[in-house]
Length: 359
Image (spheres, rainbow, N blue to C red):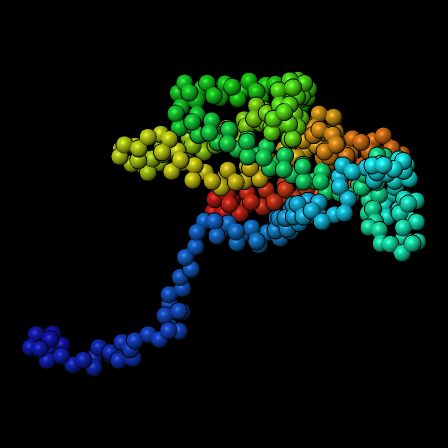
């Protein structure tokens, strides 16, 4: 054999070469041999995991339906949340509109029905002032959701700014910001909220009279100020911890070597790598803000009358709880449904977008 190879006379049959092995592969063979996953992104993968979480997905649908209902229904509903149906201009006060039970009509409405007119029913009845209770619950849901959303945005902006500065700067800056956080954490939470709401309601009222902010109301503005002062600490500590672990990465060192400033590094490198934690924390902050607003409105420190919120509706229902208990049950159920759905959705976001849970 060695002599044949040296002289150039090689018997190829001894190597058992099958020409079929060198034939071009078919498309089926390529698909079988090359089983590659389609290109995707972190956000797409997170959305797929969130969709597979049925509890979180159903909670998202409930939140969307409640939000859309609170926006659309007041535009098409025939009754206004602040209109007293029994108090018509130029007519004597009709007390039969007060305290109607669900699907019950006032005396004048029954006469109109007997005359052949169509009268839109009061699904949840009316309150003690003769206002349609259903539209007040819907409008109160809108106010509670809006306050919770914007309060969470305020908490996000302040907490993300201070947390990223403290985490990236370190040293005395970090120590100063964290000592402020420790001081705020040492204060009794609910007591400070009640005291601040009481004081700012008296001080902000005269200050905003005659301005655009007067339409929003001093109580809602005081709620936003309270969240800006007290509720950013958890977000700041969370983002600070993320920044502390990320600032030692090689891409941060490379950016510093090229002359990038701290603001550019935080905005372009560190915050985008914390986006999953930021989204999850913000989603979990919204139900907390809604609960705080409902709690303050229940105590009379929330939205300004006649504007309703779920907490103020529950507070007003206490006056006739023995006779009209459903007025307390309805806003309580709506608050529970919103807070439960947001908490379950936030847990689903954490499970879907937290990289540490998907390794």
